[in-house]
Image 1 (spheres, rainbow, N blue to C red):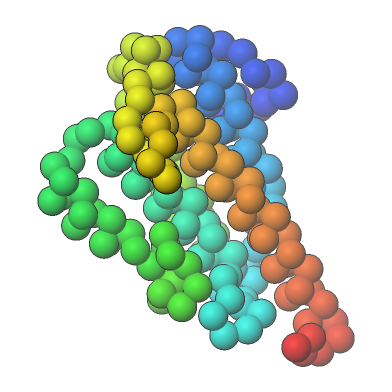
Image 2: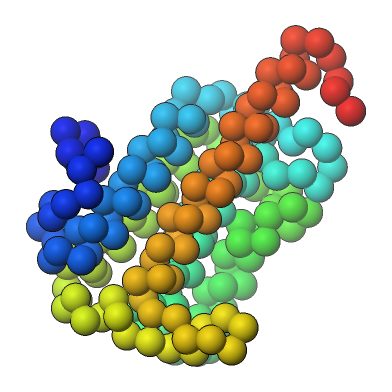
Length: 183
């Protein structure tokens, strides 16, 4: 992620123009996520406000799982059977809540390393595609068509949405530590 150009949506990263625009937005979303979590302790990452609630660690694992499943869905390097098995392996992080409760006990660096590795794979694939790939349409949600540009927009849109949840969890944890149980 190029810090000097983080506020510029433009060609960068050795990518074609439309991929550069997409990755510029993905980079900014990721930077703001990293700024929210980079100094958190394991206790803060694992904190859940109530039974069934998400933790920050669960959400970081979710960001990684969402990007991985979209790699599988759009890069077409898995058969349908392999895709189903792959999705099953990502399931706790994709679903969050109760299934995601197994996601705990990791340092922030482990989550961030996975996010970086996954993003590097995404960008590597993007470099190999023609821009027309972004506009390829397939059947998607609710009986409607979707193109790869929208699908990858959704990857960072989901992260932005959950980053708000991370901020709320941090505030709840701080309040609970300062004044006692809030629920």
